[in-house]
Image 1 (cartoon, rainbow, N blue to C red):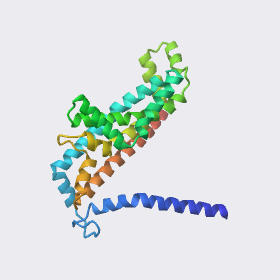
Image 2 (cartoon, rainbow, N blue to C red):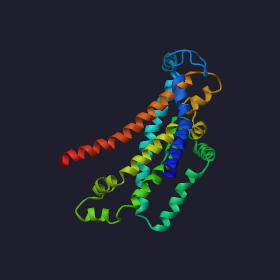
Image 3 (cartoon, rainbow, N blue to C red):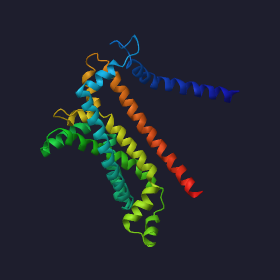
Image 4 (cartoon, rainbow, N blue to C red):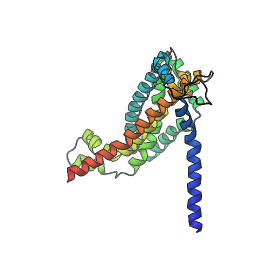
Length: 266
């Protein structure tokens, strides 16, 4: 009886927590289809705010910048972070521990500190603020998360796996791409997903390092939030939809691969 009560209590807490997190998202989605400008009273179904959003060049430009920078930052940081993690796994323990602690600094640092540091760094190099600085900043703060995600997978591997592949005639590149990478793929995918999410919704660092009219969605929403604009709801719903699609793709691809392998084995 007591166990049943505990289960009910756990489910109740889980339900309240889910309601607390997802109710605001549901609220945004519903009011993105509101016919009026009101953010509190739903007066009827309409797509007018989506039409306004797609006809607004500034909004569409920010969406394009956000997606392009997120994709490029994810690809570059994932490749760099994975190679760095593999290199660290083959290094001496003392050096590996030092580098891992240094890698944790950007993660533990408040974003405002990282943002000011990157701003001063780009200014010292004489790089004009814009697309380049925004992309470089996103790569810099995404890479440590990839290293952090890939490293545990590498530690769980047999340290002699790569050497065995080399002894069997594989080249170093073949040992890397056909032996090591497939074994750590879950960590790579996890790191890439974190990098994409971090880049996609970053505001503080982006706000400090961007310029020349290059804005991402977070900066645009911040500037629009100072005045009542229901297009924010439509834009936020679009962001939610894009992230949901990415999550579905990331979760569905491994299932399809697993089914394909089973069919080939049969």
